[in-house]
Image 1 (spheres, rainbow, N blue to C red):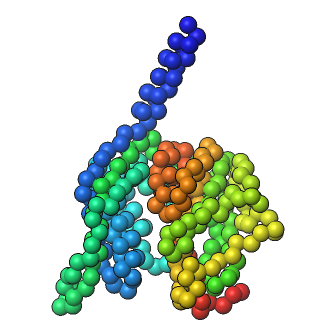
Image 2 (cartoon, helix red, strand yellow):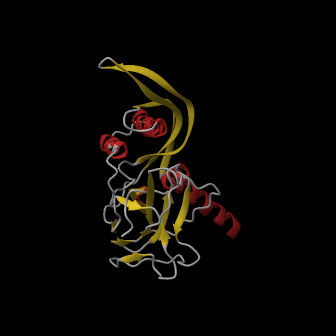
Image 3 (cartoon, rainbow, N blue to C red):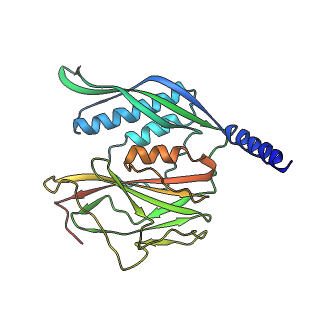
Length: 269
């Protein structure tokens, strides 16, 4: 009798979990971006973001999609803070690039290259929206750093929770900055500022992926969750982390996106 009761409880729990979201397949979502003052690789990345935004639109997600397009398409290189990944209750949990190609277009009598990306995606629609009271503040990150400069910053959460900080190089390969062997995972206190690095035994040293390049853009994602959600994937790049984050219900997490540059022309201060 106890085993039957346990089975009923497990089935009820599975039904409850399934009710929290629904997955919608989207075929042939397209994005494009003109190669103008950026590299073809950067234009392709922006075209991919546009394709993802259009996949959200095709799934029926409309809330704040325009603001997302403005945010992710920004090319100013400024540092972002307090930016939530939960602009909508819909998010892409998986995608595959179906086609990726350059096109020649004519603008004002000038031939230009436009990168075009087509994807098939799975959009997850959550029943619950983001918790506006569950937020973080990120301070201290500059827009530009010198090669071999040290990185320091602070994070202040509104409520208790768990931090994970990912950093990504110019080619979007990534690493888990925090927690690490010298800075173990712990429950963060509400309202208490956390200064990184948290110990003077280590330094966050900034180096370019290509030592010969003049300047490279790096990224950081500061993820804050109500539950301690481990990153279990063996692959760690920008899109893999975004897919992992997308699978956490919006009411259980928030995240800050930061972008900064490493330049050989900048002096180490």
